[in-house]
Length: 332
Image (cartoon, rainbow, N blue to C red; front, side):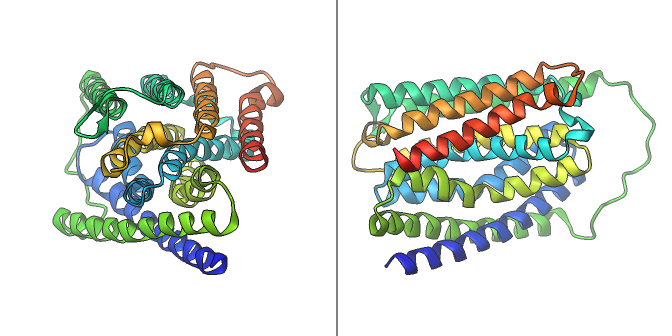
């Protein structure tokens, strides 16, 4: 049973990564063919595109009645995304890319920190009012998510309007495909991810049962890693061409979407509240996510660094936190 679960898990992970990379490609083209700004494109279209595996995995976890996988996947993806961001920062340390990051990401970071606090509080309290079988916590998360996107979107448009008008000719199209064709291809690969993401969750749940590994560990580490690989690819490409703002925007936007996906899983979880039934290990996951998000906030406010060591300290600390979390979640 364990071998079959592992085989299905690996196959589903490969398909999810392939489909999500295609989605990222079409999301990038659509953003260039329309009037979306760079930070907005990273936070909305590209972030949502690469986070569809997390959404389908979380929904499937709710359907099969596995709250630990649902929450572990959503919050664990935050950990892996930020871990990858800092790991690549260490790799590209000579460029010191984070010294050029825009302070506009501070708004997204604050929203992410607030959501981590709400998750931790909900997991600690483990009870609360609900409406139509869905926890009030889930509604609060969705409201904060939508409000945050609205604020960032308006700020992006205001900044674009304040820029000096420039003379430009008709923009040359980056593809021969129409927007309608691009949209259809986007939807096709989104459906592929829906199937593969569901397979990831089911096989992950089977793996937890057959091996004795906790569902929290499977969700927050294995499934989170598999569903977050497309984000890692997108971040690497962005940093390789020194587009630090697209990289940070994609990661923070994806993290917000991942938290919102937990609320969606709560809708499909019919055995009670997903926040009440989740195991206590998820509190540690939420605390680690808060710590890593706070590390991102620190680098957003950093203006300069005299030595390579002082520049790398936030990234090295974040990597150490993630490794320490992994050791705790699997051993203890």
